[in-house]
Length: 243
Image (cartoon, rainbow, N blue to C red):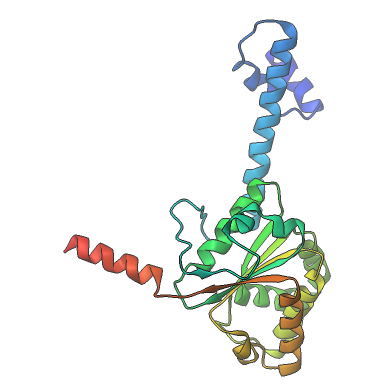
């Protein structure tokens, strides 16, 4: 009987309904069936969130538990509550995080991405240098179009560490195409330790850099991160405690 139930569940794509059914107390037929199906739906949603989180390829999983927002200067008309609501994704707007190393930019971007996955959004995290390398490789092997289509299906694309490693001409052009394609079609979160005036040092082309920044900032909230490195402060606290 159990084997037969498993076959039926597989045919109806109900997953582990047979196993989940044993977790529900029986009071009457309608209650039992309803509670079992609710459990199946809940389990399926958990699996979906786990799948979206894996596909995002975050280097580490971060949440907002204990996150310190005090280094952030908020733009006029935008605040912490609006950011955490993820309304910017629905409106296909961008978040740009600018500031010194260690002030929490990558942490914030990652935690927002993880939260977006929990809301059923398709997210992908890239260090910019890694994305540039992958785009260049796909271009070389003739698989660029497929990758670009995959990126275009995202709700949120996170580009981390913009400005750490200069790009060559081809990489800059390919990155420009990705950012141009995302304009008003999906949201970007960008982190950088360079102010916009120095982005030409990374892309090496003043006109391309100006056009790229124009597309990024037109529908964006720019968060400025100031103060000392949070990682440095934490290391000093640990050293003090251990001493």
